[in-house]
Length: 101
Length: 232
Figure 1 (cartoon, rainbow over the protein chains, first blue to last red):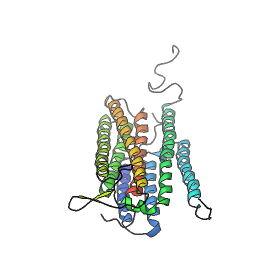
Figure 2: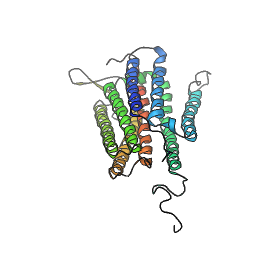
Figure 3: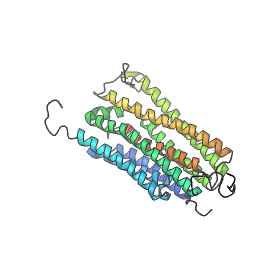
Figure 4: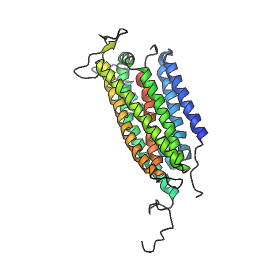
């Protein structure tokens, strides 16, 4: 059959696997350094990079249809809306001195 | 069915699909829709994590020190290994290697079980150290001479451990479901049900497995690695 989806080469899978291990070491190393307020953003940046690698290569979303890609991206977009609107509430509560907040 | 030519299409192709390719695409799309609901499910817990961490930053930094970085980090490596074997199992199905599927699925199940065994020892230590939220919450720390000494944790630490147990507990539950799923897939692979033309169950079970790995990729730094000054 000619319509088969492309198959990810073993070499690619092993490269991604090694990259994920390196990033795991980097995130532990970074946590031992004091970046002040930047520690969590650095940890999240590494985690998002790792997650993107897993989604793109291990889950092979790069070979999926545009419709599937839209669903994947929109899922995480909605997660950002949850965090964004949630923080919009909690982070701004102290800005105005509302009694009994 | 009388007018239906039995050889017109692959026996695994269901009648409402035009082709095997479309059937596979539909399976993957459907699985992703489910995974998006899972993202939102865990997302709610992460939102709770953000809100309470914002309220009790000290409790978060101090309580995180009570978690075992070796076990958490080791489990991260175990899960990444299991994601590789899972991806290799899907690949083995795509190239029609029965042996490759069986070997990689068994490795995936073993690595998943290793994760849960490590988790058991972690939870056991938390119970012994009085770090389980509730009426018996009474934080203790293991001293160098092997005895437990009471420690003081800031206000809000119980909430940290509540979220720790809920988030890692639900993640572990997903691992149990994943292992059960892999046992079913292994039995199907054993019977030689998958090949280059049809491997949808391996593919979508693999998506689930990788998703559970991704959740842990976020849980590890956010729970175990807080406070820049922890010493290994």
